[in-house]
Length: 200
Image 1 (cartoon, one colour):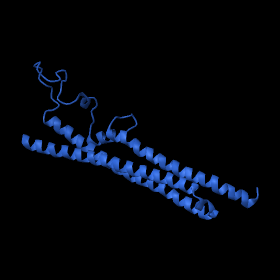
Image 2 (cartoon, rainbow, N blue to C red):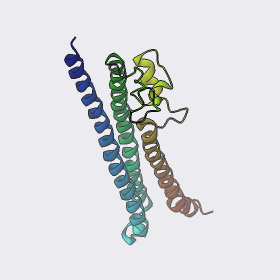
Image 3 (cartoon, rainbow, N blue to C red):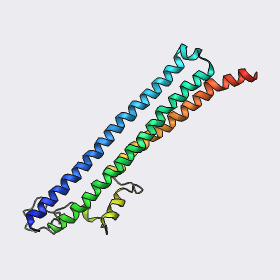
Image 4 (cartoon, rainbow, N blue to C red):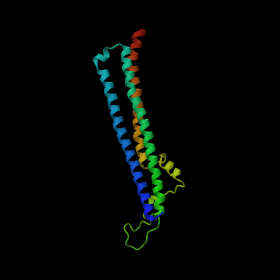
């Protein structure tokens, strides 16, 4: 391949990397807005039910049915978060795959070579054209690089590891809402009914 052909392939891989990075950000924004809305709607509906005179005048079974229907909202949120996180992980995986391709091409195009030391260079203390962080760790394969980028156990500071926390936050919020609705259901509705029914 000619130098121009390599440049074209490099440009295409770079565009694809940016495309997947943009898609990952869109996924984050969409699911943050959607999950925040579902949290607000669930809390608003829960407060509305327990302050509504119409709701409080209903017989116990009708109240329980309405509250159990309300549990569907955080359950749906949890499922949506799961789907969104799976899609986000896929987009990040593709982005890191393109990053691995770019690193190999940068090596081919000479970006990894040492710079000439003529004293007139911008950032003259840098020995190579790429950032020193590119040389801190070596990966044996693209798969190893992708797995390393998606492994957040060592507290990495990359897009995937930072944004994964948002999905975990909303997943936790879903569980809290489900549990709190069930506790409220038992505490405010079932316990008084049991006491009244069994005459304790």
